[in-house]
Amino acid sequence: MTQALATRCCIVGAGPAGMVLGLLLARAGVPVVVLEKHADFLRDFRGDTVHPSTLQVLHELGLLDAFLQRPHQKVRVLGVSLVGDFPGEEVRATVADFSRLRTRCNFIALMPQWDFLDFLYGEAARYPHFRLLRQTEATGVLEHGGRIAGVQARSGEGPLEVAADLVVACDGRHSVLRAAAGLAVRELGAPIDVLWLRLPRDAGDPASTGGRLGRGRFLVMIDRGDYWQCAFVIPKGGIGALQQRGFAAFQQDVAAVAPFLEARLRQLAGWDDVKLLSVAVDRLERWWRPGLLCIGDAAHAMSPIGGVGINLAVQDAVATANRLAPALADAQGWPAARLDPLLAAVQRRRAWPARVTQAVQVLVQNRVLAPALADRGPAHIHVPLLLRLLDHWPWLQGLPARAVGIGVRPEHLAE
Image (cartoon, rainbow, N blue to C red):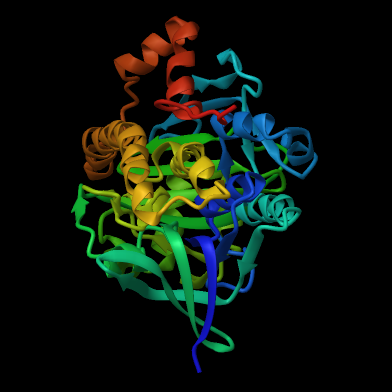
């Protein structure tokens, strides 16, 4: 038997966009139900970077101090090491200096995403209008008179239908709802994939988060306190050829750009200790249909470059709440059709920042990473002009810091 419930707003997906939006709407007095297909927030190798723009939102909510009491690491500088073929042949350059930002928090906070989401849930659960349904997976949409009128879902107790005046899809880059609603996706392409792995951190290791670039190899190392969260970039679809060469060859590739990790790499048992992220960059041409809005990765899947995906999703959620909360909380109950212009307004507000960010990511992928991965010649260290300029005029390091940490058109809570 199909269960049924009704709410003003149904949010599908309890990731950063869904949880921030649920918190903001419940805080405004809007009845909201959030559907999450998993039993908890524990997922490995999710984006764990909370940027200054998101920290500013937490400050405006009065939650920043409580958030920063949770275990985290602060990243104030991002750099890159250019690694040659000979032992000790290495040049380090600073790319972004967040301490130059004139923001309340001039750093990136590194926190496991499950801790971030658990924090948001704890705050949202204080409001009587908020409800999170775990182990409840959206399978489709309910339609009535040409409008999306709710969500079809499956829970541990059987089929479920959630009627809602507004459905917000926050269910990620493989969004079930955007597919069910027939929204067209534009693929921008990505020439790279990423292999995630975790390695212990020693006291004598480099002091900061950053990248390491050598002959045909690029490794990003994120300092997580007692371990390194590592991203080894490979050509798109290159996992098969890499596995054919064998796991030992993969360990050697990583050690070639980070020799100090060589002994620790032998602690990896095999491919089960490595997780593949198939990188995709895409976006919806139209983010909404009557009764439905897509935000976050459901509207625009981002490359991992810059780690900005979480923060764009949070900015989307803030813009959505700013425009929709007053109407959804109206005691008189706006007719559902009157919400549609507000959905279009959210897309107008947030589409441009997403497009600009994706354009930069695609440029870096195609002009920097893809050629670097294809380079198999002798590794003569040559410091690019851009890095030399950043080193010569350190004040320039604030520009990439702003692009990564603040982004295009940051959002603030409506008064």
